[in-house]
Length: 455
Image 1: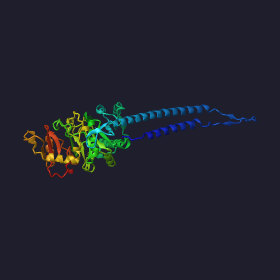
Image 2 (image 1 turned 135 degrees about the vertical axis):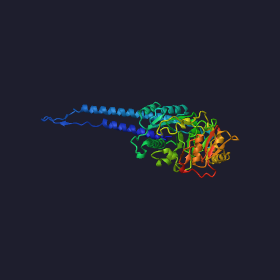
Image 3 (image 1 turned 180 degrees about the horizontal axis):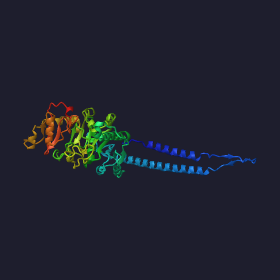
Image 4 (image 1 turned 45 degrees about the vertical axis):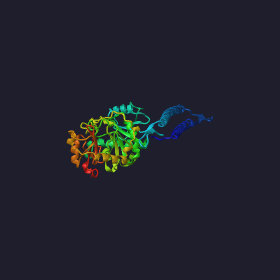
């Protein structure tokens, strides 16, 4: 939240007005040049030459017009200032009544409300309107969730579309549009360099200029679920409380129909894999990452052990976002095979009234690992053919990279790695559903950690 005091605005306004009055009286009372001429004879006398009166009058008229313009401009500035202060007053009034979640994940009224901006990254997609329409439709309170669109690319058509939503959204524009330096071998990946530059600038604006404490990040090609805002509001205290978490994500990389339990909309997991695609981070994390922010491929960079530092994210069983952006810098990588089949949640879950303390690492790990390794081991063929003797969760074991990739492909899971971590994995375990049965694709009990060589 921007913490700008009313006294600061009053001081600025007083200074501007004082400067204008000083400027006016300096020029208005400036002495007129007088020319003294003798008559060439003995008659004497002094003649005042007023031949420049027209020029002086003209200059004064221009000065007065300029002062009038300054008065008008500063009047507009003061009006905007008053509107801003009024809006902040309304926010303060609403904060007293806002329902939030306490540190234990329980619903209740807080003394101070939460304001989390939604930062929408846009470039040259006029279809950003689809994303904005949904954000505005499902947003419970515009003061609690201000929408800020950050646009790169200087694409006039997209800018025109975004401007139609003002003042329901705010628009900021990435100012550095000069040609970006790209190594010769990576010319075709220039887009990834521009995206990293855009992210770095926009996140610094949000945290260091606007001074917000957290942000929800979406891109211009995402659909959102009806409980998108409820999901982030409910998990926000968890992110603040647990230092072993560094993001909340609305995305399940394996969230395709057939790999999720449609009745488990309220189920959340910890994951070592950074999912992105609709996620929330704190200012403290950006303060840590900003000094070493990369020039390209920021999402793969953030997944490296040096950045992750064994921290996890929260992700849902059923995604709260879904991408419709087949065309982009990735040229539709994974879209036809996976992304277009992601199931978007349709059931509203009251996360702000749900106790989520079981997702802290101390509470989660023992329970999760016990559930995984107490589950009976089955083969893919037994699972496929329904030859499992009992109900409940089962486990399929993988021993090496090849075994993992082979089984993942058979099951329809994403089989790639980033810094040795499979998508959605937590402590090496992939949690998913098969015909609504919980299944764990898990390593041996003597698992030693992620292997960078698997990437």
